[in-house]
Length: 162
Image (cartoon, rainbow, N blue to C red; front, side):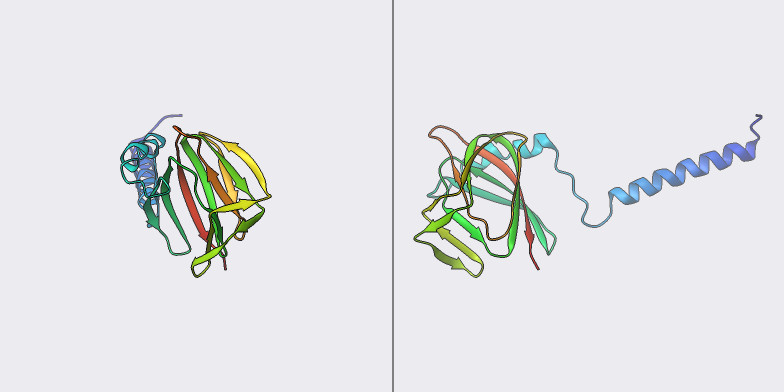
């Protein structure tokens, strides 16, 4: 097949348009890319912002019906239940044991839809570490246990239920 100048112009134009389309898709509203190294790098600065439970959180983005954040723990957390929020946890570094299910002991509502307790009983404990992904549906008790001298840093997607 012989290429004529019009074929070359057509190929060039289609290539250029495809490039613009890909660029436009990458810049679409709400698009975000968090690189693995960037997420892992949160551990060190967050370790200087720990609360009394040795926990720190940094919001990343809020999209209305869901939000993303980074969390870092160097100690055990409270037992938690979110009545209308599903948590998806993606572990970046460290390790912990995660209690899922069961019931709360001495529960208190800290704000509408958010219940906390010093501990939970029953449920199942799971060891989690880098690369693990955990889906925690609304109304499921969850509690992190971090061994002394250890830490865990994780990316969280909080999805609002209808």
